[in-house]
Image (cartoon, rainbow, N blue to C red; front, side, top):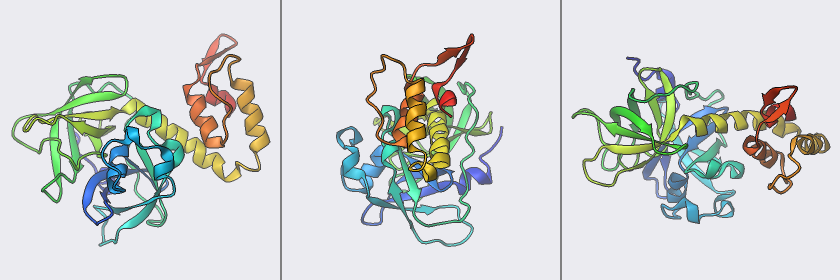
Length: 273
């Protein structure tokens, strides 16, 4: 079994509400971007626990305080801003924050390439209610949908999935990497059952973020080019409205069906690039 590495631990952040109370967990995934749950963000901003009722306009330009928990030296909370384009990515309970300041080279969560993790043991670190911190241990059960996976605590070791674990990356002990993010729990006391956003969703988000961060600095200069490239790969009967930004174009491309060229199937975002 492969226990969580220092890289996993150092990517963990705790997320504060407006009064300075820790209300959730997040992890650094790429170049100063923090992944967490949308409901952690709405709680942090005092907007309740139901992000599906919160529009992106209500969270845009708002800041949230986070702190790297396993930082080698004492560190003050760091301000982050919410990235509107990734709000509730894929309709899931997902949000992306960007560090306004912080480490020059922040640690990055080790996301495991996709492999079925069913039956594998997991570890997850978070900040559960009524405890300053702690680990939950158990097994990854199976898919509940194409975006959610059930996890369950095993035996007496570790904590059940409690409020405060939301947004925590799930470490697969067999694969030696992160395969999901804690999003919800069974409310029954002692159930030790939780649900994570699947690796599929996280991998798509990371892929989209990599393209956005690569092209965003040149978006204005390349606007005519990326709009033309989008038109070339967009299906004739596409239901999507024309994108108004490069970020929107990239996210729409991820949802478009594959395109067959010379008897081979390509993702449309690959052709776009």
